[in-house]
Length: 435
Figure 1 (cartoon, one colour):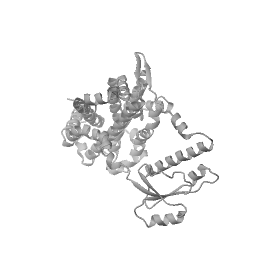
Figure 2 (tube, rainbow, N blue to C red):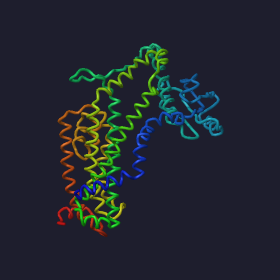
Figure 3 (tube, rainbow, N blue to C red):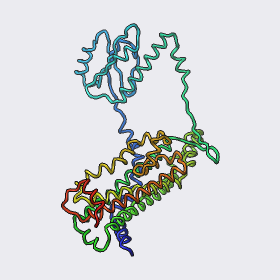
Figure 4 (cartoon, one colour):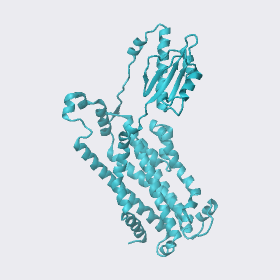
């Protein structure tokens, strides 16, 4: 067995045998499932508490509205309560959360009321409450304007219609459902997982190299293994750990979904369908099922594995070089920022990529190797031509080979260098230094 294979096997087995690996592998699907279910379970605890407001409505714009959202409205007589007196009443009465003051309109102009409305509070009023009040005020002002122009507000309300467009995609085999929201969720989820995995496993390489260097174990290892072989062995050994963990997660997640589906927890039973026949032919459910069937699961899974491995290898080689150059983890900060900026920037631009997956920004980010692992995975659910996928993959592989060569030249010198203040100038010198 070659020294390179021995190093990779050692890195793989040493991590797979750890309890933390077993725990994360088994609990990972439950953790990610919890992230999806937790918002629904915690909804009752995240609801906005009921607010109790005083109202001084000199405009008589919303008189009669006893409740706006979760805000209970108690009206004060505007002839008895000026703005100042109402503020004093609020300060002296702890039962109320705030005071809504509406001035009298000038020449019957509702816009004047909206521009000069004021909401006082003893503590911050929840943003959702403020939005609800603003919406009601706008609706009331709109009605007043319609009446002023001789238009019946009820007739206008009855004339309003909500549009619901069903999106369909033309393919070579026919027509398929195309729910953009589902594709956005899949693309963002895949990009986010790759983003986390690259940082997680690449950081393991860097920490492992630093530990071996500071403990001087590496001096014994390089006596029988070339530094470049040691670096590649560590990178590929840890990569195998990541791939194995991901595949186990896929199998466990599929098993959990099949078990949940067999229990019928998220599908209506026959009694519910008999009561409400529309549940059996829900347009939303049909659209979701059609969109999922129109996607290419083998392509998604294969692309995910390729870009996960490619992105990890690309950044893992750099992280290994950084770990070999420094003597402690605290010294890595000056080198980590330039390396992580492309990943972080791509993730920050995720919304722009998903909203316009065929635009120039999304295209170029999916071609540049330092950002393509995240950007391309966000585009694939929306459909990417084969030449774009081939070009992006080829550039990623070519860049990985080149950066691995560069990282190897830094690694072979830096792994045996101690007590030096590492700078970019010194690293540049190592690139051209003979071992």
